[in-house]
Image (cartoon, rainbow, N blue to C red; front, top):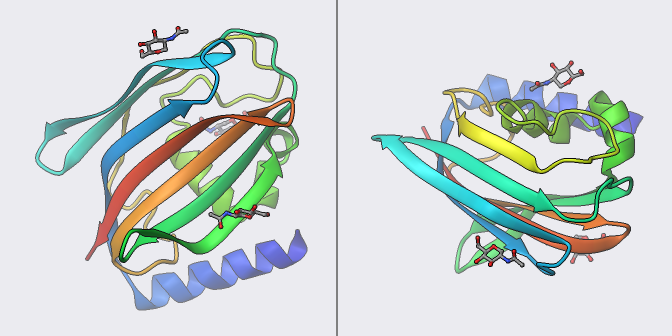
Amino acid sequence: MARGLVIGICWTLLWSIFVAGDFQLQNVICESFDNAITNFSRCEMKFIRRGVAAFYMVWKLYNVPIKSVDINVALYKKSNGYRPFLFNQTLDFCYYMRNPRAHPLIYMMHKVFMQASNINHSCPYDHDLIINEFIYKKNDLKDLPIPNGDYMIRVKVAFDKEYRTSIKIYAKRTD
Ligand SMILES: *[C@@H]1O[C@H](CO)[C@@H](O)[C@H](O)[C@H]1NC(C)=O
Ligand SMILES: *[C@@H]1O[C@H](CO)[C@@H](O)[C@H](O)[C@H]1NC(C)=O
Ligand SMILES: *[C@@H]1O[C@H](CO)[C@@H](O)[C@H](O)[C@H]1NC(C)=O
């Protein structure tokens, strides 16, 4: 954990010294592997003006309360298809939500995406998970240490140690 923190801080420093650039959200795909357990009634990236997208998600949970959540967050970069790039981290989300700062890179994304949601609390979850009109604001993720290009962030979510859903967020980084 300490090592992760140091690496995170180094990246952030190097990045803010050498590069400035920003992301545009482009698309999102939510997938449920078992519709009897969980399902998405909405999962949409809507363009509200040129270059600005709003993200809406209504994620139904049918077996509440949910007390065991693990997530895998992996970044992919496009070059002949999407290939794993830079990080692939699996963590106990219920533990994480009690100690979010222990994972600086995940926390950087968390801070951004959990605005406009009802997800930002510790376990258990006994309600549908909603993100209502999340709008990426310029510079929200500018410290993420990655070069220009097309990316996909894939978040797989396990309940009771079994992967139930995958959310893929597509974004472009440009200067
Ligand atoms: C899951 O969501 C999809 C899309 O909204 C819908 O077509 C489908 O009927 C839903 N399935 C269940 C089991 O609710
Ligand atoms: C991420 O790592 C896990 C093992 O920790 C592996 O099973 C999985 O295939 C990896 N995913 C990617 C996208 O590299
Ligand atoms: C999430 O919750 C934590 C703890 O309550 C709070 O410090 C943080 O500001 C919240 N983040 C967002 C994006 O709402």
